[in-house]
Amino acid sequence: MTSRYDNRNIGINETEQYKEVLDEKNLRLIRQYFTAEFKYPTIEEMSGLELISHTWKLGDKYYKLASKYYNDPKLWWIIAFFNKLPTEGHVKFGKIQLRHSLFIKLNID
Image (cartoon, rainbow, N blue to C red; front, top):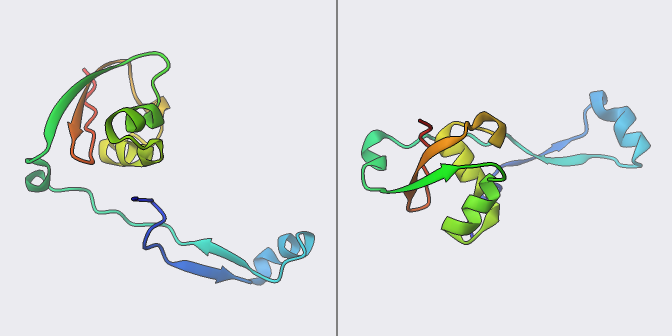
């Protein structure tokens, strides 16, 4: 299964800046994921994807679309990343083009 945490570097944070937080939680250090850097697909890479239409309506959520088209609601972040719309609040109501094959393309008319 694909996860956005796969292949992420994990750092150990024990800096003085976090000393108060660490003390409050009775911890010596915190392990944390570094921010991932994803490469947006090129036009050539996107050319082989199948286009699917969907009308964004009240109640739609990325996780629901991911569940419907990918059979896995945890893959919601792929829809957000691929469409450069980080949250559902950035999506406007209307027609959405979905590209199937692990990516869903949202085109709002």
